[in-house]
Image 1 (spheres, one colour):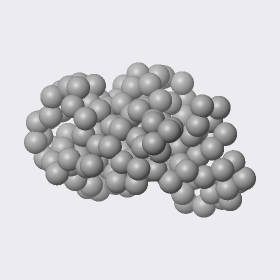
Image 2: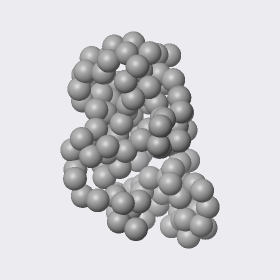
Image 3: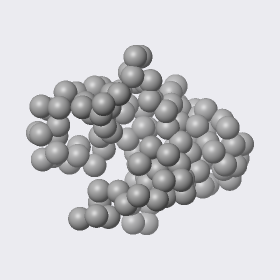
Length: 127
């Protein structure tokens, strides 16, 4: 389920991103999408491809990874994000929910660290 008021548009410096076409209140579930789960041995190969930047660590011990379907893998990163994601390991789903009010035309961000306000540097800023 991807809400119809979400669209993918080009961004100035991040390729593509997810944007709102209407105002969205805080606390709104905007997407629930399945994921494709892969084992740790697959991660070695994925890390050598363009998919490296689109996968999430997965599982209670983070030994697996996944690619989110829907728009999941297109949300860009922000340390103080306006959305958060939740992983449902049992049902292989990810949910995106707003944590602040979103304005029409605003880009939606998640924090790749897992918590919408985690300031630990992410992999592409450490390199």
